[in-house]
Figure (cartoon, rainbow, N blue to C red):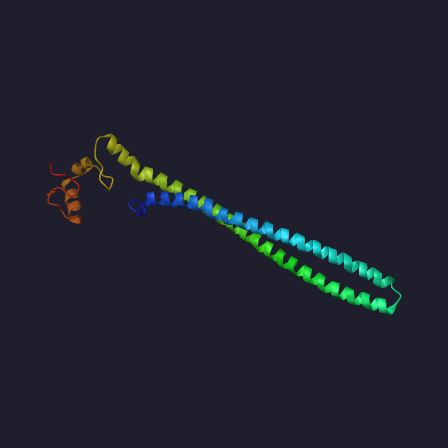
Length: 195
């Protein structure tokens, strides 16, 4: 199993930043794409239902003109009943349009939120990556590279064997008090081989 790079805070920041950039580039854009598709389907449904509502409104207007032109009371009564039924159908046709418009609004807001999350994640991840890698290089790796070039073997703390040997006896004793000596190291400190 892969474990987090906890040996250096800077390395951890750099790798966490790379993960944030990758996540921010993939997940929010995928969700935004899905939201755009859903919005397109809703808009198509609204257009179809809206066209039906326009047809019903045209029929309602035609019945209103016929009602004004009618002279016979029984014909007026039949036209009023038909107009009432048509008006109910018109309201029923407009209701899904109103619901669809609200759904489109919510989907568009979700799309904008996903895009904001993506940009924040990519920007924050890029900043963490830059800070992590720069600090890692200038605070740790630069010294390790210098020691390797000089032929010294750096230990896990970034100190070389030569620096450990060049320490004063007082600082060597202080270093020994914080670490227990191993059988091979004797009294020379924990990071020096007994040769």
